Length: 159
Image (tube, helix red, strand yellow):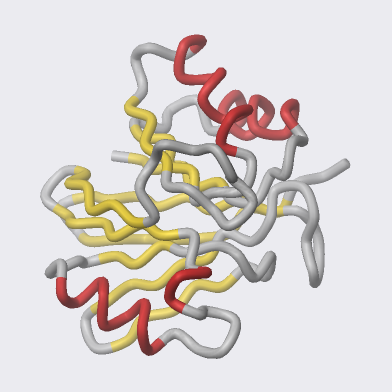
């Protein structure tokens, strides 16, 4: 099973579509906020995929939740934009929230800086910003979930 993780598009609509096309084998497409209206448009174009989104601090009129826990295969994924857990100051609050949901994977955005880590049984990923990175190139995340385990990685976007 493949999970595509996108965050912080801030209205750059075409880059979302490019990521979905590039990762066309993804079963899930997850969006971590800040550009949610554009993201929603793609769920109609790819009805065979499962789309889930959480609201970011720039999604002013979103009806989506600030965090969501989903099941992908047999793995629990805790999704948040991260601003409500103050991720720019550290990950402790987000990690505690994910552990409170018995998550296997924590996904967050907001910082516009990509990150992949593992801490005390919890995989942690920030896919970075697909449009406005603070360091490096625009990026998104991919998570492969197999019987052998979880493999998260970052994909840099060429422009």
